[in-house]
Image (cartoon, rainbow, N blue to C red; front, side, top):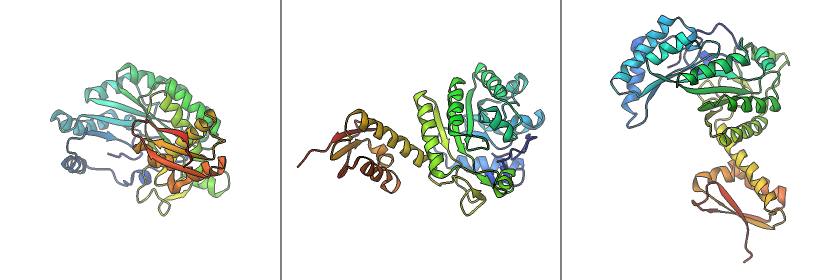
Length: 331
């Protein structure tokens, strides 16, 4: 359930939650219940949660928070829904708020940190500091609530080095889940004004994929689940919608996972002296086939060009976790 700009006193330069959420008007109780019940009709045996996203949920008045929570909790009590989750700002977490959320069985809180570089936060008009993120994360974990951290890349004053530093600081907070969003220039935001005036250059798709592949590797190495990379495409969030500029791609995560596999394959080839082979065979798990090959065979083409291979063959081997590369035997 989206509560766009509820509880949020700031206008972050990249943000237009009503466009991002696709929701213009506030939902009434009957609309919230209808949305939940319609979803339950098709949920089957899935693990079902109710999530309150958009705005800053814990920044709205406590009575209004409780109004939303009571609606959701009525489905938790009947067993139709397992638990609730929400997203909020890191400077809107307190012991009193956590008491309320636990009373209604909120089990996951995602903090919109965006960056852990103070200059980037300042230039993005976030209105909170790195210390706010650290304090909120500790309070949430101390209460036994699952912690999520949402980050962005490509904001004003951001660099690849800062993104990597942010990821390492996020790892130190020990979140259970992470989301990574490349900054997009959305209509009717201050970032659009900066872009139009030539004061902001968004990262390209290739640059964003390169950065996110490194971040994904950092999080995977620390067993942190990255549950989303890139905004979910919608009618508004699309090249023909409200995205003015920036690294939008409808299958952005797949591009990132494919780039990460490509980086690992290049490293594997060099470490195992396969760069002087004339041809190679890549054995890979069936689940990783599309990531190994890359969209439009980009990974295969790049490996051929980089190492001057005459041929690269692909073989499925589900005993291999990701891939294994061998010199191709001469026939």
